[in-house]
Structure formats: C-alpha cells, structure tokens
Image 1 (tube, rainbow, N blue to C red):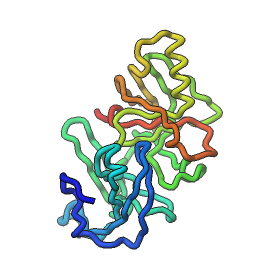
Image 2 (image 1 turned 45 degrees about the vertical axis):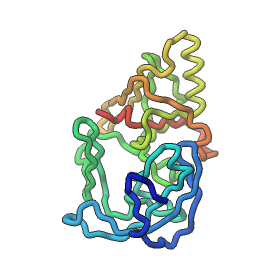
Image 3 (image 1 turned 45 degrees about the horizontal axis):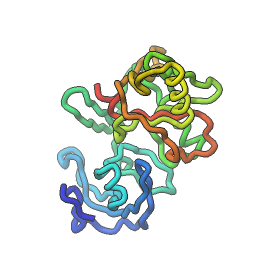
Image 4 (image 1 turned 90 degrees about the horizontal axis):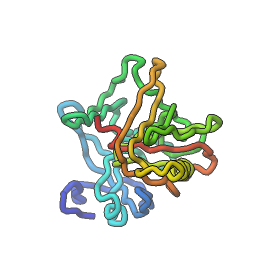
Length: 239
C-alpha cells in the first residue's frame, strides 16, 4: 500500500515470515500485511534493528485515517509481536501539556508512590491477547452526578492515546442515558471525571468537557468479563 504522506516505503521492507491477518480497529475490519524493515528512534542511542510491523490496508485507513504507532509492549506469544515490544524499552512517558513529547527509556521512570497502579487482569483472567494499560476506577462522575458502579464487579479503565474522547461499555452507556433522561439534562456527557486511587493512597481525577463518547459494543470480545470498561482518550490525557 502507498499513501501520499510517505510514511511507508515498500521497497525498503522485506517479508517478515508472518502471514497476513484480519484486524479490527475503531469498529472497522481489514487486512494487515506483516513486513520487516530497519528502524531506530535515534541511531546515536540505539543502533538500527529489523522490526516486524503491520501495514494497514484501505479498509482500515479509511476509518480512523492514519498509520498507527502502537504503544502496547507486552503481548501473548500466539499473536504478532508489538512494535514497541521489539525495541528493548522498559518504560515511556507521553506528555501532552505544552510541547507534546514521547519519552522512551530502558529504565523505570516512576521512582515513588505517586502513580496510579495498573492491572493485567484482562490479559491474565479474561484472555485479552495484549496487556492494555489498565487501572481500576474508584469513581465515575458525569455532570456532577456519580454513576453507580457495582462493587461486586470491577470497572476497568483503559488509557488509549489513539482515542480522541471516551468509549464505555454498553451497560454504563445505557445507565447514563436513563440518568440523563430522568434528570432532564441538556448534555449527556457534559463534564466527565474518572477518579483513581494512587499507590500512596491519595485520589486523583482525570476529567474532560464534552468528550466524544461512544458505546464499546462489539469491541469487548472477552465474553467471560462481567464488569464495566471505560476507555479514556486524549481529551482526558491532554494536560
């Protein structure tokens, strides 16, 4: 595939040894061709190495509209390797506050207890093939009203820099619809905040105003998972 922005040059790639796959992104499905090419972020820091990556076909590019650089690192062995998982980096930092930067490090970048603990439950307990960046939500408030979370089942939050707004599981979406109609609210998703407990025991919030919000629908393939999922995108991570 060739696209006008020139980020993929097929003549510089070679066969990866992996067969083509059908992948789903943003409720679209399409073919992905797995190729290999030399790559490095900075040759002064790390020499170039041959990495496997997926080339998206028109069915996928015409949906979200871009070539994806995923930040997932750990994957199950039976699926294709992640791009970042082949590089040897151990941690990264996405800072969108002023001059947007992505910092990669081969050492740990968190050195104290001021952080939100992540969990691998979706991978370990519910067989998700990749290790998403997931935390357990402590609270979920929309337009000043708490949306009740079932204490018997977990509510997981996936942090996703490839998403603009927010996506929520169908149960949460329908529950919010009923709440808004009952209170005759003008905006369904006006002021949204999600709270978390840090490792140190403090509470922090991520918030956004009128984030584009959609139900997850068929994007939740883990049939044995009975909790709720919230996917937070750039609207919550920008600043």
